[in-house]
Length: 588
Image 1 (cartoon, rainbow, N blue to C red):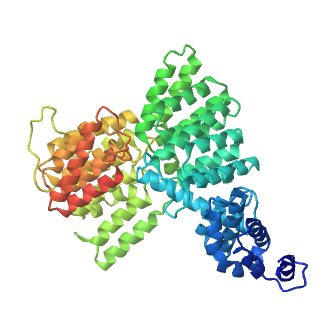
Image 2 (cartoon, rainbow, N blue to C red):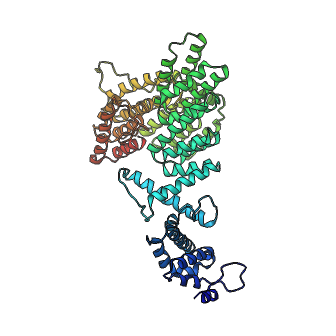
């Protein structure tokens, strides 16, 4: 028997001059002698990458050996390794991975970078990430499962992925390891990788960017941001620039008190630290989250209220001026006014061309387009000289064109809060008395008045850095007009939009209820604006969702109000109201 074997068994050595074939080794797999089969498996493992097309015919035998519990573990793992490589060459990565996991570390080393290892690692990552996300999305964390949807053993797959991350960290390839942890949504591994990176600035930047752009799960994003914040806090004493990223992280987490805790040491520090604190205040204002900025200002006042040093108090006052005093808006307004290069001849030629074509009369679409063009041309510059010089031409507008023409003043004077009332006084409706008694609002007309109220909201609410006190005062005034103008849908339309702009992001339940009352009058024009205004007031809060950013005090009432809005949108026959509510819900 031995002599026959020596004559028929092939050589898999690349130096052999005979024709390479695996038929002899495959024949040995049928032998009852375990040692012969084990010897054949070792030989097949050495040549399977070149003779896989022959070995593929014996896949059932190889899998049977790999599953035979009476055989030694080493032999079973060798059989699984051979079968795995055959499936790899057959372009069946899932089956190849299943058998590679059975083969163990000795035959499947993730630290190697051969095509076999790289393809199976890619398949393992895809399967693991898909399974982890499915468990999270279906809220099945409490259910114990042993296999993925492809039949891969989850425990072994998890061990493989964890070894892959450990290998990447050992090679100091932290970004690769962190990318896997973020895709798999494993907060613990993110924390371990951050600790292994030892405060590497590049890794922190990468993690912060990935959390904002790649991670879609809000719950996991919050957990990861908390890990990043912890790493940044440790760096702030030695690297002041880390405060910039730390403030951003706390803002994403919705923690105004923590932001104030970062700002206080900077404002109390050296002149350079103080300047960094001021810059962070400007960055907060530029983010556009007025409610969050106001909360930071309140926390800052509380933290520095007992400051005995006059210099510290002056710095605190300066920071509050940036946050809620309208200083940022004043700078933007001054810059746009001084650096406006809008060409007046554009409007002159446009007006002349329209008049020559006879398109400058009443109810002209072109006339309305020209007025809107003028608003865009001089937006935020406070330069309305053209309209004042051609006031008669502007008055040719009628109905909703008149509304737009008056509202365009709000676009031109956006942020010019100190002179807003003087600019719009000729167009504003009479101020309603405090006791609610007075002349009834006319049910017709009101286009200029409604546009003026909208313009008032644009002036005070279109810039995130405008004065919080001025914005609140304007909001109270517009709410007076809102309560008194239910009879006139045009004025109500303008007042609603103005209230939405000046109370944007405040989540004020009282204002929401006032707008809801207007919505329930079933006026299509006023209801559309009320729906959008409610969305502006609750913008970004997530109202109506299980996970939201609403304060606990009014949370239940606001959630109920949002539910009522959805029901009303289903019941009403007005497409305008449906559209307004839909836009409002999208803003939330």
